[in-house]
Length: 246
Image 1 (spheres, rainbow, N blue to C red):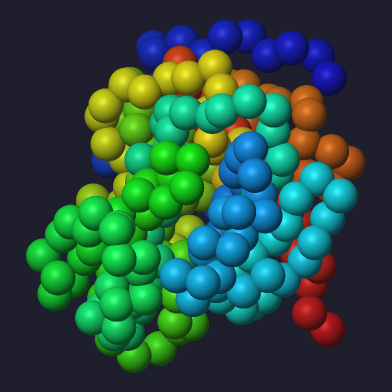
Image 2: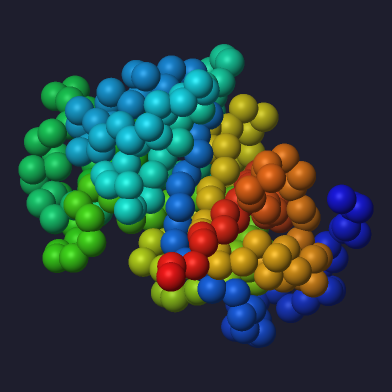
């Protein structure tokens, strides 16, 4: 693929309030892929203490989730210790916050108000959380991803340009969210490998990315299209095509 010209600030206004409608419908937050030293140990922690279950075992790791209809986590085996980097936190929705807290290990250092949110740290420095959601949805499904970036507005604009919907403090992909925290945390060995979103057409999202001058990542595989979000964090956003339902 021919390299794109570097994205210049003067190419577009750096505010989501002046963004044109992208006409790209993001269907769902498909999965979050993590590079971890011990996928089996993290799988056991997530299943024993967060209400997830193992959905698939692969040669390079495992896939876990509350339900195969929700957002899954892909745990990919990596060499050597990893760093949180741009991954601020993975937050899961629960209907009973007290029961969710009781399921954590006794030595877990839990923070939060105990009424709407709880934060804690899992294996390999993975920051996790629970948020109270009353009614509907899948209990223990992923609610949102918090990302730590150098320039939150620049990242927000890039996400809006490919179809994420800015609303309040979050950018939304269907019923899931991405929260941006302006705290630089680039790493050469990040926990976060990529975030994947389901779309109706890879061709449409590819055209949108090229029109906006976004950096394209060539290593997403034949069944996905990927971009690199602006900033030193090098966060990769993958798009996977969901076949139409007949």
